Length: 82
Ligand SMILES: [Zn+2]
Image 1 (cartoon, rainbow, N blue to C red):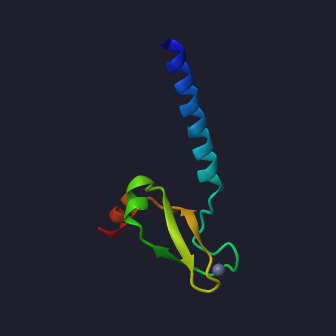
Image 2 (image 1 turned 90 degrees about the vertical axis):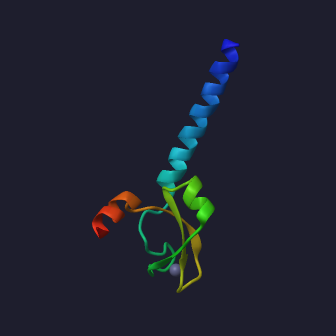
């Protein structure tokens, strides 16, 4: 039983490492990586619930669409508004 727990822990650790690197590889700026234009936010309810640290954005100039890191947390945005 102990070996199962150890193997499961290593699988979880590998998944965490991969997700961290993928998150760090995502663009953090809100400009298009192709043309440099400002990106429009596409709201996804499921993505917002499952992975709140990323946003789906779309470039109005060249049509690029992709996932970017959230530059500022929603908590900080809410605090800044009030
Ligand atoms: Zn673009």
